[in-house]
Image (cartoon, rainbow, N blue to C red; front, top):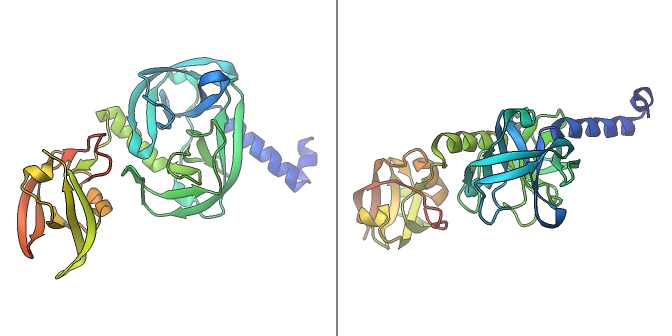
Length: 306
């Protein structure tokens, strides 16, 4: 069908626009090959010389990997770092391997916004799936404690191989990375701003700073404290909280002057305090007590504590 014909047919024009968008974004994608010729996941040239994919597809993230690029070209990649809490893995590749995508602000997405996820098959062909945003909301914490700048849920799951795929809006701007690991029922999108933050951290430090106090806790109401606090239900042996003298049964109400009304609020308050000594106020037997503890980097094996 010619462009002239398509211009008079809205469906044909829409089809051509989607196809063109998939080809443009697809030029920046790679297949991560799995067994038996299947596509394990998609990786995308996020920046010149930097590729991003999802972490959950690897049992153990390899230090080196071979991607399949446009026209089946093999592209060698070396691991720069992973952040399982946001399901991202970052690799270094040759800058000439593929053009980097144009990333934009996922905050422009609303429920009903049209998006397209673009991947690549193990044979080197571009693959794509389009749909709408099911939900778009504010900051969100993953089940592993990762902080996403925005919750973006797709209207269904993801086809095999599309985890790690760049997700673009109707203008062709890449707004994030698709993942099937953060929800049992829906495909999710890690927003571009979160991807950039994680990439920056992994390239400079090799990890994403995440505060660890070594506590198990649950929110409770506290007389005299409008926002409540966290009842300490467990302590990691040798963790920062135990070392500072915190006890099971204490109620943590403030850390570094910020309310500790939930584990999410606590993590956000301490996100940039790793390695620093902070003041913590607890209620012990109804009496306010002040402790000094040093915030540690969250060890990967302590996934269900703060």
